[in-house]
Length: 271
Image (tube, rainbow, N blue to C red; front, side, top):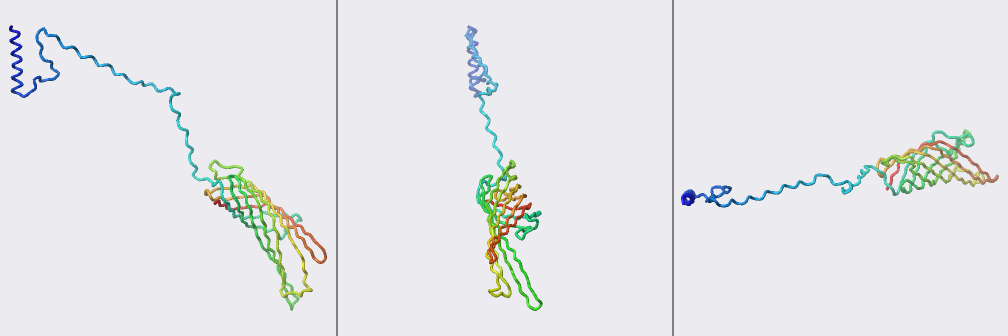
């Protein structure tokens, strides 16, 4: 009986304290309420399951994705593969060897020309054109009278040819090339005298010429820009001039040939 009275006193004390202080009935949520003597204890909370750590082992190599292939770095400067090509060149003959042992008027130590065609990868095909002119003047005088004779010669040559890049550097800026060019042409001669001679004293010659030229050379080519390159060639050049004359005394054929080493410098643009 005394145990029941003490329990009731405790309950009334707790209610009075809650009414006077405004606190909740239980001061601490984690403090269990008093239990009566002989009452059963509450069941213990179940223990938390241990955390499962993730598998830290790497995946097998066979299951890993393959790395992407390396991307080649773009070339900063390269040549244009194809397009219209225009080559302006300047040639100098180092020395000349004439077939008859002498230099001929058809040979000049300095020459220039234009070569136009098409570039297709390593190859350049085209047609060259050269033109030259030289005059011969003769003055006659007997002390009182003076006469002058002029012979004007204009030569032209059409030269089909090809160039091929045999070796290239990794960036395609420097090439070792070979060149072959064959030229066919003629020389047109015109003569006049001052003062003009009488018709019966003029000598008329029906003259025609045929000009054959060839060039074989290795060289180097440097691409400064994708559309601009500079060439340097050195090789052998052959020149043969055939002259056919039909005059009153009969037909006459003259042949003159020369062989020379030459040096050629040119600039080529591809459009």
